Image (cartoon, rainbow over all chains, first blue to last red; front, side, top):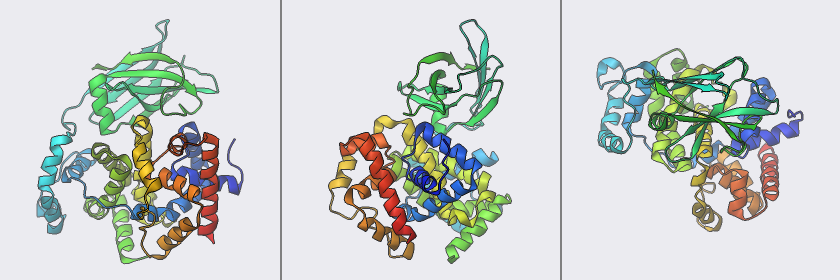
Length: 230
Length: 181
């Protein structure tokens, strides 16, 4: 049921911002937010009101390598310290000051080599060998494209949820899968790409509408598949 | 709006027009706050760095969607980062640090909420929190600063899930009435 009163909107918006609204309820709320300017304004109200919480947390300079990774991902290049790039000397003094920290950080944080792209594909089939989904992963773009083929249908009260089977054995939720011929493209985090390259294993479970309410599979795992290099 | 915010709004606006220099300045001026929050919530520098990257990539792509109703630019960016942190926490629910929770509940040292400074909005939030019933304040604090779910809050406070949900909802309702007054 959609929130339909001012009080209900307030309650849900505050729980969304604080973070206690979760699972399928959180996903449903995000969907309602897309439709309702009033609900969005309630969320913004709480974000503004609770901002002092964030200000009370200690600031921490991130490793300089992070900025290079962001530039690499956004623009396909990493800025070198030069005046011609137009950033100004102060920025590079700041960056250089963190150089040692960056080197140390790189010892424990190993970003994906940006020049290496792994294109992988998986086809999920039914027991009757009927193709249900085609999945394409591109590590350079951090993307996973999921296309549902026409036979894919699901009960109105349920959704198929896609999980990355990490080497640690803990499934990581990636998304609720599209059905009935729809296509969906999701962006993977660095951590997810690293895990995907290691395990290449995906599983699909049947979950309540909107996805697992717990963050872990609650329904039966109905399909498993392996991504293979193209 | 103070000078800092005016400058950040300008940098965001220029970023929305594709000005990479402004985006770099924006990152330089705000990333320590966003990263500090991520490290605090996630307790993992690896994950915090991933979230920081995702946050600024989203900021670059959506800079044009910022407007004053979202709060200051830093409010908007912190919200983007915070929701990504919550997503990351939900993906690894088995890593809940309950020892830290007990420390928060029993410590008499000023917590993060008590350390909010004297600026008007901070002072109002701080005053309202002080006026809250201790159980309300503790649940809101743990949810916000640790990213706890209802179930995790119930476990941490050793009380039924239904009671915990009611506490959160009532606590937020009281807080809102106070903040809105």
